View 1: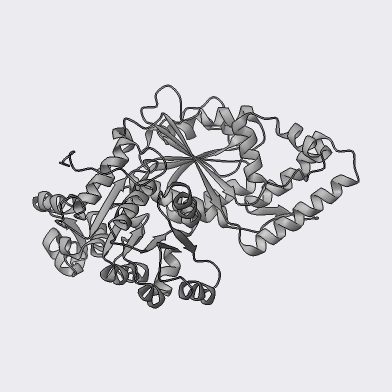
View 2 (view 1 turned 90 degrees about the horizontal axis):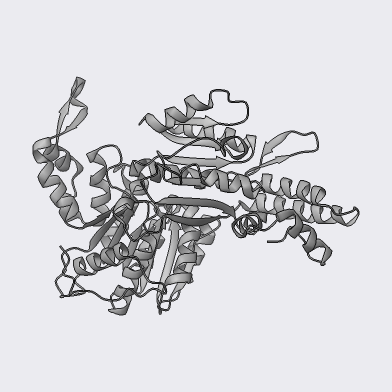
Length: 480
């Protein structure tokens, strides 16, 4: 139990929730900030999606900085949330911080690292795929603190990604590992994550760990089976440096939370988008601007942010996978947390992409879209079958008359322009029978009409009228 007399204000610009303050206090205690006795150099935040792991980590980073213990911080995370970390550090860190997000080719990333000043509080954000490729340069960066977000990405001890993070972690003074749970499908997943976090907990030898906690069975003794007799020892070790909280336990969380994830389109796709936006604006100049024609042009821009474009021959072709990659990371996190997920999208091509993604991952799903006749069976499958982990709904088809309370997180892959459809879609999880706080995640392509659409829907502004008014007032209606 945490001694409540040992507590410091979190150095963040907002008032933290009680469970975030408790997690912060736990880490400060483990790191010895309250009494000078360091229990470990690594802490795991096993906090479910939507409970605020990022803010809690920013608070711990600030505390270590204020105690003079860190000046160089490395954040490793999936590519789709590098922007989230940048924005949240800028918005919430109540201490001076310089942020570098590694982008571009490997050579450009190496140049960025080499130009980071030696003085001041420096935060370097890198995606996992780049981290192991830049291991030598990141070792020279010499991070005092490493934050490994979505730590379940390190579960495979044999991967280059995991080994690279372990090498970096061996040199860092402090480490945070963030995930809903370190055990995704089996207890074996714990070793690699804790090898990065604190090698004293389960050791540095995977085989010694396996021999201690597992019996090898099956043909050729290749199937590990966890020894239940070792469960108490296993859990005691795991939780001695872990702060665990579920959304259900966060009594102070609001009933509804919203999270905007800004996604960067690939440079080629962004250039294509900018050209299309310019063309749409030029075409408006030679016509009578009405709600109908401005929304028709807006539709093509929205289609592109979702990864597709209809060419002059009316063929739909893929032009970006940025949102799909972001969704993939969210699905992985939800599955690792043991949570079900609802994904809403507008366009047929997006629905096809999402279904292919789930098939490729081997994840059970249900779907309601235009043309699906057995809606009730699909909904029942999602609501009652534990193996059906994701519901994929086309906004216009799945926004009415169905209950999806088996999930409490909904991702809007894309949006249509109807306030009614938007509100109805959201109500599929937030309705009678829902026992948990609901989280809505919006995937928004940075610098595109996505932001304008979402803003109009949340503020209940007539989008078509706003676009026409913008044009008549001399503004490009498609600018963010």
